[in-house]
Length: 175
Length: 325
Image 1 (cartoon, chains in turn brown, yellow):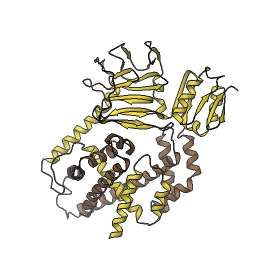
Image 2 (cartoon, rainbow over the protein chains, first blue to last red):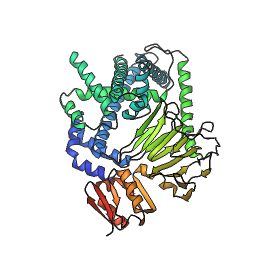
Image 3 (spheres, rainbow over the protein chains, first blue to last red):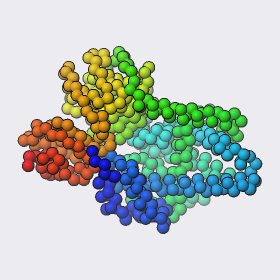
Image 4 (cartoon, rainbow over the protein chains, first blue to last red):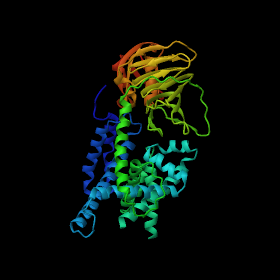
């Protein structure tokens, strides 16, 4: 057993397609940070040490995309924390500074309920397909087989579910 | 406004497409992003919302009460949430403990037939493709290349491996053992990680954790960690052996180790795992070989197999032939 940090096929694809990946990162909004983020992509790939990858370039794109999503989410979190902190420090919102962790638990639970209710409102199949794909991590092709529907039906159910959870998120962020 | 809505619709469609491991058209996605600088943000918002929702579902999978969105939480919710968070942590601990525990023998009368009902479905991988299939009960099956397995939504504790190779990581439940049928054979787990391969009418099993019972209703064999067993269709003789535990299921991490295998077997296994057609020339097909092969470098350069096994590997048509030097 060898312990190379990542399969050579991936490394070769990474070196050969460096410019394409940079272009993708810039299109994804990386701006000046594109080079740094590309380095982060490589570190992630090396650390994951995936098995044989049938399509190395697609794997690299996917990792780059995840790096960008993580980045967006953590920036978002930081913004929210900052806002919550300044509101709490200014004592303009009664109760917020009181029990922040308890508050967060309640908010998380309430949010989980809203998501569940919104998904269930779409009907049994879209809700179940969303959970199978996004929570259990089952590929769409396999989900289609499981539910005995076409791949395009799975996609359209997922689009409806994504829209529903996006609407919840935007409504909460407006408050 | 209308334009914003359209952008959101498109972002959602791309979120669905790119969220699947099979998505390959990254050039088209890049082109869409480049069409408008606002699109990346619209896509990020959709992906983040979906990730948040999935995480909430993870933390509270059984949320199914009649609470309406926007309804203020009842006072007891904080306590309930704290309690359920505690239970979740304990559940997580249990989930890992069962993997580590070698459980006791479970004796069950087995009905070894495969009946695909309305809820049955088949999952297949192409040669060289691997896929992990999580089951509803928390168990997981890693499929190697060129594998076909039948599953059933109504029977989450059952799988039929028709062809190829699979690594089972199975949640233990003494009252409801996990059953795998392979050809005419039946395997029953008792809290286990085990590897099963089926090719050319031969079945082989190797156990890495826990205990597996082979054909409990007919001719029982009990396999413990490090035990291997192979049996041919129509045969009644089990060929038993042992394997280093670290090597069992190692194909799922991108390696294959051969221990005194014929080059014909080596060629077949490598073809299934890499998706590249290897054949052993008649002159060397029966030759025995031992060694460990990293699959990704091999897929890049099939000829690199030569020095390892003291053979030459040359290109012939769409495939590669293993021959004597």
